[in-house]
Amino acid sequence: QKTIPACGPTGFIERINCASSQRDEYKSCRSAALEAQRFWRFVGSALGVAAAAAALVVLRQRVLDRRALEKVRKQIESI
Image (cartoon, rainbow, N blue to C red; front, side, top):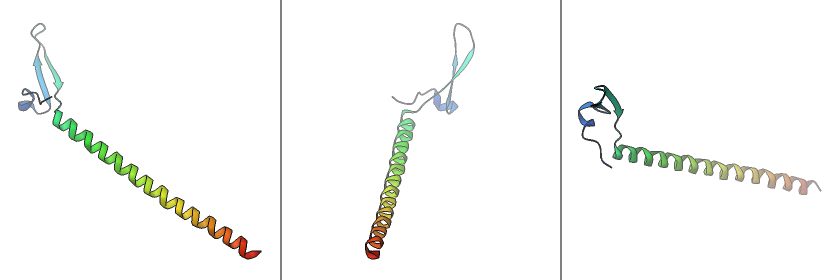
């Protein structure tokens, strides 16, 4: 889909004159390129958040594993 040419002069809103009722109606014009850009920006940000969360999970698991090993080591030394 391509941008509707009538949206050019008005920016983001298209004015439509209805023939039967002689009323002016307004509808928003969506740009296919802008929608695609917004979609990929959303996908990229979602992947970024997912990668950051996965990294935090891995780091937290390493800390907890280290604590557990230290605890076991101390218990073995006390015997």
